[in-house]
Length: 189
Image 1 (tube, rainbow, N blue to C red):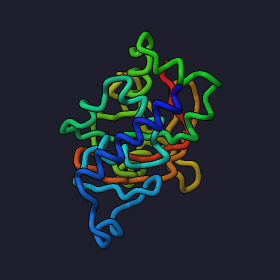
Image 2 (image 1 turned 90 degrees about the vertical axis):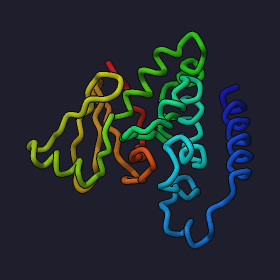
Image 3 (image 1 turned 135 degrees about the vertical axis):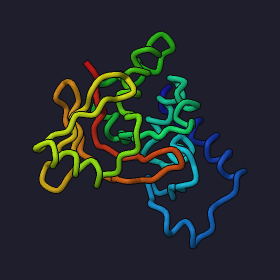
Image 4 (image 1 turned 30 degrees about the vertical axis):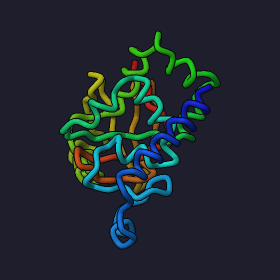
């Protein structure tokens, strides 16, 4: 059922984007690519995420939680965006359960745990980590903290349960913030 929702949502997104027009070839080449799609820095976080083939589960979850409008707002936001593969690492049935209307509050808490109400580039995050002796705490929109750290030259995000997400693509600039693509879903307390 979720895969059908995602496919239908992706098709609607493709149709909607098609009606808006396509960036010129030269312009698309200068934009970072996420999930095979150019990320236009003049577009909002949900507008760009809806084009990325590797973020369809996240986009479906954001819509189910009713957060698309919020994340389209002025921000600024820093979003740690889990890929489809990150969601697939969760126990079987977790995503399908979370997108049910009766679980909207829990889904919202998990998704807002991936959002920091500030615009933090990887360079700024790494400086804060260094200045704080190897770890830096950030407060999320959900009200709980994430821990930013480094593993070698990779930026990592540690959740309240000790799960570690690695930033696989940093600094995808958006009209209302920045997105860092991650390989693990972060879970609040």
